[in-house]
Structures are given as structure tokens and as C-alpha cells.
Amino acid sequence: MGYSITRFVASVDANLLCSICSAVLEDPVLTPCGHSFCLLCLETWLEHSGASSCPECRGAIGSDETRPIRSVRNLINGLEVVCENRSRGCDAVMRVDAARLHLDSCRYGPVQCAGCTQTVSRCELPEHHVKCAVIAAVLGDDDDGDTEEPGDAIGISRQVSELALRVSSLELKLRRMKRELEAAETQNKRLERQLRKTREELEQKRRLLLDTQYADFDPDYEYGYRAETVSKLSRFIARFLRHKPSYVSASRVFAAIKRCHDNFAAASSSGGAGCQDDIHMLLATAFSSNWFGDEQRVKLRCWLQIMAHCLRYRPTAAVSGPVATKTAGHQGQDLRRLHITSSGVL
Image 1 (spheres, helix red, strand yellow):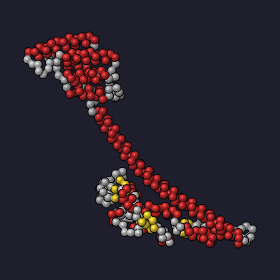
Image 2 (cartoon, helix red, strand yellow; image 1 turned 180 degrees about the vertical axis):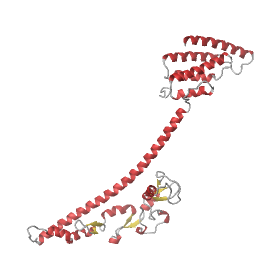
Image 3 (cartoon, one colour; image 1 turned 30 degrees about the vertical axis):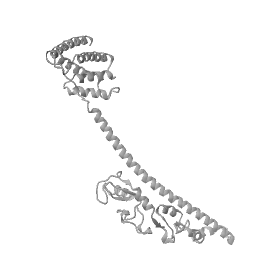
Image 4 (tube, one colour; image 1 turned 60 degrees about the vertical axis):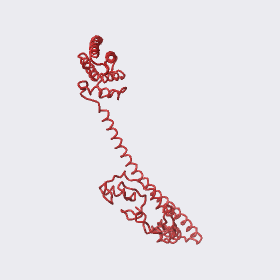
């Protein structure tokens, strides 16, 4: 809750008032829609109103979307206020940021008598204890019925006053601890909100990572039937080059690689080979990975040798006509011989 406007020595700008409690902002925070409120007021509103909306404009906001306004807080802390115990006789004037410290030791602060539980000012407590009927009755309860000497009564009154001061000091510490506990609970709530937000962001990134991992993965392993799937399989193997995902079957991936190579070999034999670079990249990537056993790696090496031979004799764009036709013919013959040789190895 905010600071009561009646405590301020000078008039306070209306822009420094909280629209929830109508008091001067305490721990001011700013919403995404541009309105300012007391931190405790806004948290109470969001927790108990049943709606995540701004109290001012009803715009949608989340409890973790507010930001502290340090400049406004510093401005308010510099304003002068009177003591909360002014009605009890305290005429002290101090800055807002010193008011709480003053209140803990104010001579006019209300305290409770340990005997009759009557509330009196702190400075009046010793005198009240001397006159308190309950305390007097307890002290006057003497089993022997002896009457106390005046000197004994004065000594006892002094002891009572000292005990009263100790009680008052303990009550002061208790109030301070309660305030610190409330501040710690508020901080815990803020940290819990930040933790929930961080977990949500982490879950979103985890899902995004999984989506990225599965982007080039075909659970049916239909690679090699279309030209564009060759580069897709190559990218997928490269992404997990040294750490094959557990959901991937190495044997089915190898079968898909063989299908890509066989389709290329068949097309090359007829003089219409395409996507040679993609096939070469796929074979090189697969050979560099640790997905396959020794026998499969031998086959990959043979296929790479075939690809290297094909790329060596591939006609350039500047070559055309009979020369290109002759080169393509020789390439097809060489490829068939290499393929037959590699088949014997396989």
C-alpha cells in the first residue's frame, strides 16, 4: 500500500498517486501499457481480481511484465513527511526513506503494557508500569503478608521499568523481523514468477530445437526417390555427425544412401546423371560420420571413388557438340566398369 497523502509536508503531484489505493506510490512499478502502481497494490490486484488486466485501462498484462520505476521511487524518497505518530505527540519531520527507521525508535510509538495490555506511548511506558494495577497486584501478592518498605517498592519499580524497556525493545525487533519477512515473501513471489517465465522460455526453446532437429528427418526414410531429398539427408547426417540420434536407424539410413547412389549410377549409365555434387556431398558426409560399421564404410569408400572418377571426367559448360557427347560416352563406359568392380566388393 502507498504512503498516506496527508503525511506529506508539501502538496504531491497527482501523477505520483496510485490509482488503486489513491495514496502516494510505494515501490512504484510500470505496466506495459504505461500506467504506474504500488508494487503490492498491483500484485494484490492480479492475484485476487481473477483477471490479468491493468486496473487503469484493462489492457492485458502479466505479473512478470512490470518494471520498477527507480527514478520515481528516488523522487518520492526525497519528499518530506511527518511521523505516523503525530497524533500521539511526535512533531518530527523526515524524508520518506528515513521514516521507517524513525518509526522503529519513535518515543511516541504505541506499545502494549505487559500487565494490563493497555496501549500507551513508548515514552510513557515506564511511568505506566509503576501505576499499573495488574502489575501492582502481582507484586503485592505476598504469602507472608508483610508490608514492603518504601525503598523496596522503588527498587521494584525500577526493575519493572527496566523489564518494560526490554519488552519494548523485543517488540521493536519483532516488528522489524515481520517487515523483513514480508519483504522476503514479496521477493520470493517475484523470483517464483521469474522462474516460471524462465521455464516457459526454456520449454519453447527446447521445442524449437526439436523442430529444427526433425526438419530434415523423414521417419519413413524415403530418401533418394526425389532429387531434393539427397541434400536433405546430407544435412541431417551433418547436423549429428558424431552423435547419431537414438531414434534414427543407421541401417535404414545406409539403405537410403545406397538408393541415392544406385539411382545416380543408373542415370549416369544412360547419360543423364544429375545432382552429382549432392550425391558426392552425401557420400563424403556419411563416410565422415561414425554412424556406420566397417563393412558399410568400405562400400562408402568405393562409392566415393566412383563419384571422384565421374566428377573428374564431367564435361564443362564450355564443351559442347561431338566432344561433349564423346566425353559423356566414355564417362558412362568407365562408370559401368567401376560400378561392376564395386559390386564385386559389395
